[in-house]
Length: 607
Image 1: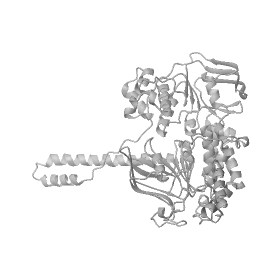
Image 2: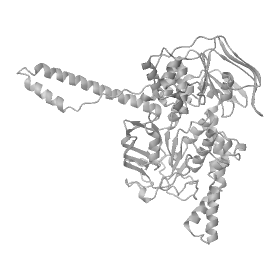
Image 3: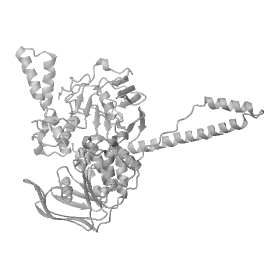
Image 4: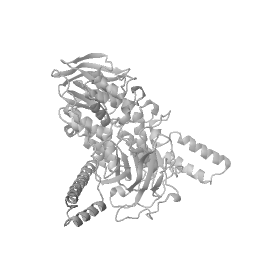
């Protein structure tokens, strides 16, 4: 990735601290002037478009429109179709300097397509996508490309492969004696910026905020999981500080501690943020404007996610009441017309009402609001009071010791969440409970009548490959009516003809969701769940919460979704360095006792 030398720019409006964007521009590529991709699957740095891309509003850097900051991004009457389906039809949207915006809508509504239009990776069928001439964009996709031998620090600073390329350009120009060429000067500036010690120091602080340790910086990135590499790419964008951050599900690979740090860091971010997320708490803490994709339009709501939900419901109530009142009026007019049409003294009035009715602009009945799916799932068999006990557990992966002498008991009816930094042993602990991983010493004992079920994103071997989705669900719950089965599957994003797809052709995410539904219709009395919300949209998550709140068995789970945790957890187990510390209360009780929130805030301030 390319890093030009910072240049002086006009100041942004100073209506609050976030708008005082005086940050140095490090890491902004001129190669991407037209919005070209810089490294597929990696965070994208998009430089300022050329003059031809200047929007037509006449709004320039530093101008104010009706007292607001100037526009960075405008979508004007955008239309886009995909596979004969209209995703957007005359959609409009604006993003102002330093504004925090969420883009919401069901899976498949077109959120990622909209990002592609903004990044100029795709073109609208009609309408305009206008970026301010001075605006720099940074993009984090959901998935990153595989990495090679570059270090974590190289990925985060942008040095990966770039130094060699720049040095080749410099060497070729010097050999030709062509050191006054613009290409030489630009390469020289970028080479200097890559070696800027201040940028590297900032990068290291951000990496630590994301959970990396000092000893991780110079290790090859290929030794780390995709989630950890994605954190390094995300650190890269925060070092660059583009004017507009486009983030597509940025919290997917973060543990709770790094998520808290990231959220607090973004609160002080000097640029604007356009976010796609299914993390309700994250949006509530950060967002001030919501755009919902609804019936091919972009509908704007002011406020955070919870305020958007409230406004949407109020708008629906008003629309429904207006429709209902009009229906009463129409019914009364029709009754009058039918009653007096043949009455000489009233015939003219009846005709007048008939003309009035014909001219009336009829209101459409508003579509029902999408709600979290409610279904009375069956309850499991009752277990004994002690559900599972681990005694003197010793577990290691090779030379790496995870647990040494662990003792733990889970009791009936507890809803326990495992928290702690990535790599601390949360997934290992839940796998020990499930019998999915061996331990070298100790004992695992189940209580009376315990039936255990284990859900993981990477476990799909329970599906019959030749059965359809609907058949697979009916296989584990034969008494389930087909209408109910289709409704349940629909709420977990299996729509219409999807239910007839064979299990062998399903993606990893689809297999994960199907396994989740199977647990709900035929529940064990001990449910072990590792990141159950990853492949769900917000409404499916709400449906899962409602089902688990009614669940009368015992639940042990791992999640980075704070709203999900707050809604369910009655007990918290904090895991770090092989030590398990219990907190017999909900998530907020855990935060209060540990000061985790304050520590995350202090870590940001210290930077």
